[in-house]
Image (cartoon, rainbow, N blue to C red; front, side):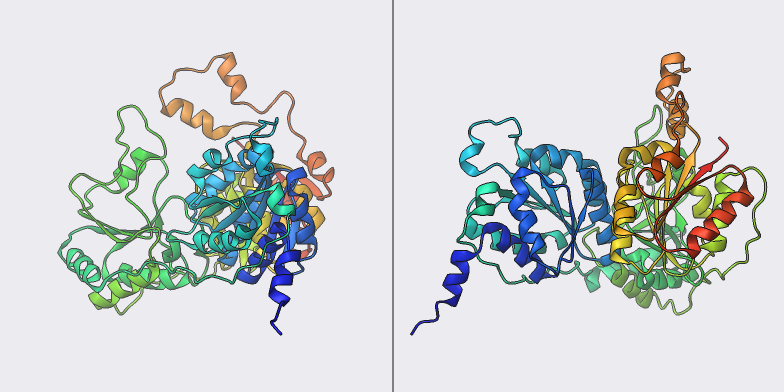
Length: 526
């Protein structure tokens, strides 16, 4: 008698069940969701899949930012659950940041039932057109038989060739209709390996150069890559990181490269005289914005540019092979753990940094959306406890707190420190509610200066003229000033306001010693 169990399984499994089961079989363990009516069958499917932990987010930008943070720490994708085109657009800014971080992410977007699409109901939209610019891969499962297969395909596509966000659209009738089956986990693409010929070419170019620089990103900024970079530094090659990196291993005992400067004229001056720029895990640097009378391309005209590995490449292995080819046996020294005195006086970004360096435990995570103020913390922590620093890769502010949600979910036993400005924090302040609900060990430091300070800087740099009352109003966060303590406590996160360095140090020490979420509103000068 023929075995009919598989056929019976297909007959009783809905498209939603097949999609969720497939992703669980692939190893997906987290879902950050803001669902609506068209996702109800996916919600129920997740309810019956214990291998995936579902986290409710009150705004889609929190869900997508959390999936980004999860991927940067876990090294693999989480899924999001988004409601049609408007839901995708609400999460779009942090999907953009994730793409720039090369962070794998599976965005599952519920859609109207296939026959309902043609009726142009109020929530109908061109999801494919909206999602395509930030998606490495995008397909719609228009029949239950496609749901499992496309879920497996989406999982693989999130890993490469270059890792990043993918979008799987699931119409409501596919989700509720039987006739689906889970698909087997796919083979995953690996990072592109650099050929021996290219390694030899790079070694010859480095030997011939008078002032070579290697610009790194990707896995070159993790331990294996930094070990190789330290050898190249000792050989005589300057090592620079990109200005913004998905994940950077830092702290005492780790080699600390220089960082590409943010402002274009500063970066151009810093690179003056460079005759060879080798790229490892990145592309040629350009300025963040265009400015009058300032070049947008930062590489000196006289410099040769050689790509050792792109964003889809194994940059760490390429650096190791280059160091071997050059015979670079010794390593540049790494910073030793420093003792930092308690800061005193009026609170500033640098005194916040000193306290973070004093109290941050080993294996911490820093989610950086502090814009102008976080540099003080960054500079203070090169010789602090070992930690991972997650940068604002795509420039879309409002990333910090959602990213911290995902990072803390991926590494629950670590302390996660979120740095955010008061302007940036208001974009996705709903993340505090998720931190409280999930009891995440996140300490959020809000730099409160009642201003979009970076825009005041940029106003002068762009030559737009002296601000009048209208311009000043658009760059100020006063009238009324935001009460961060009340805002945080209303969402279940205990909060403290500090204006003096000593008070901040005590508050941070307490937050580092207690589990669960905390918020410190840091009233900083400037």
